[in-house]
Structures are given as structure tokens and as C-alpha cells.
View (cartoon, rainbow, N blue to C red):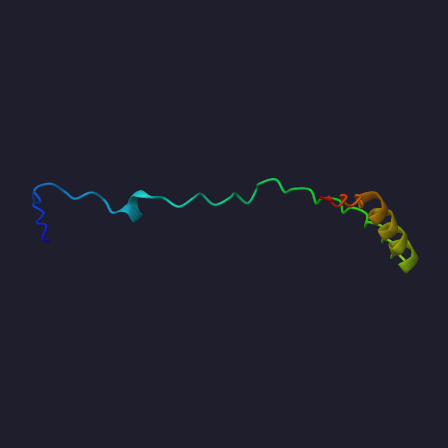
Length: 75
């Protein structure tokens, strides 16, 4: 497909996009500076759980979440 454009030579073409678009203004040097934020105190380290603690938690978990098995139907 061929497209032919007919342009009137007496009309001045529009300015290119680069001439119409202006760059963002640079921030002024006298802009107020932000106050530095205070740093938070570090979180206290957690003590690692012992094997006995983990075993106790697992025992509690299995006791509370264990549902009784359904009874087998006899025919």
C-alpha cells in the first residue's frame, strides 16, 4: 500500500516535538532541606527455641488438631 501526502508549501510546518516540550525545571538551590530522620532502636534479638520447646509445641499442635477418625461402616 502506498500513501501519498500532499502538503501546501505556503504553510509553515509545525515545530518539532522536541522544541514544543520543555524539560522539567531544576530544583532551586535555596530549597529547604529535610531534617534527617531519627533512627529507631534495634529490635531485641529473639532467643532460639530449644528442642524441648519445639517438641512441646508440636505435641500441643497434634493434640488440638487431631480429629477422631471416622468409624468404619460395617455392612
